[in-house]
Image 1 (cartoon, protein in one colour):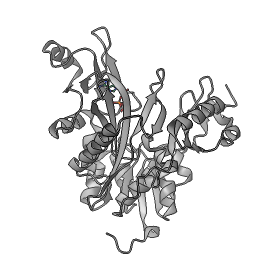
Image 2 (spheres, protein in one colour; image 1 turned 180 degrees about the vertical axis):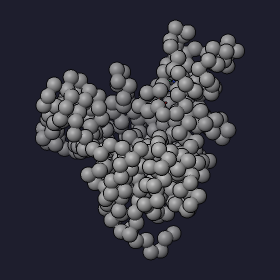
Image 3 (cartoon, protein in one colour; image 1 turned 90 degrees about the vertical axis):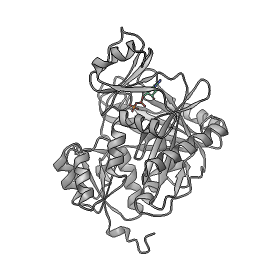
Image 4 (cartoon, helix red, strand yellow; image 1 turned 60 degrees about the horizontal axis):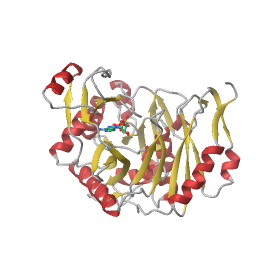
Length: 385
Ligand code: ADP
């Protein structure tokens, strides 16, 4: 444990400057930590709150390396970071949380699945292969229709993921991981945190609903509508994964619950996660504060729920593109327990994530009632069409 921690003399680097970076920096600023961000976009969300903005590409060796040289501690808010640069910085003594080796494993959906198999962690059957090897694997019976093909690297928000029903469906180009389609009943997530003293804490499970058309998350509610056995099992698995990875930091674990009630690991993310947006408003400790505690070798904070919640993404309305305004903003704020978070994006376009609303109430049912009102009131539009 650090006896004399002077946070105001700390320079924390965050790769990159998206909305999760912005939220992390807002929390870091409560502890007077100076924050540096690396992002190619000069108009990125976190720029307005960061102490120092550095323009650069987080996939570029030199940009990441030079950025790392300016800070005392380095973390990231996305997976797509140049690993070689992180490895060199680590060898040269920079504290990077989570460790680059863990990021390298998680960046690759194939390596992730092999890790679950090796550690006896429940996940759907899979194979890793090139596109042209898929037909052979089907012929040999190693894979059967329907399956889900996922590009091993670079996918997000459902991009790089394709459901293949039959030979009529077109395969994705590139090295991929193919897994059997799960008959999904529910999708849930648990965020675990671990510090260097091996203290581990989990936030309660959330449940996610998805929009059929955009494939984006529609609502995330907490607590999830699952049995207490399932909740315990999901948390136990999240703890086992973070310990098996020997990881310090924050790990978001996404699970499927199939129609028979069985819990399967879908994927993990070693960073703050959309499924934890609500923690800012509905938990004693937010996911970002928890990450800071883990990074700084501090005791982890309470993961106690202070309120039930429903999180709604604020997405650009179809048909609107240009300078953003939020229709119904004040009407929404007249509803008790509505917390609006905007990401600082100047321009909207259809389905662009512009912010989120967390709606708090005593019960999830009640929060949903308010959330449905919020949904019908607030609209992300632009002056131009
Ligand atoms: P991303 O990393 O882009 O979020 P995911 O691997 O989480 O991609 O997949 C996106 C969505 O596709 C999931 O939330 C789920 O709805 C669906 N999906 C992914 N894998 C499977 C599977 N094996 N069976 C059924 N649906 C799946």
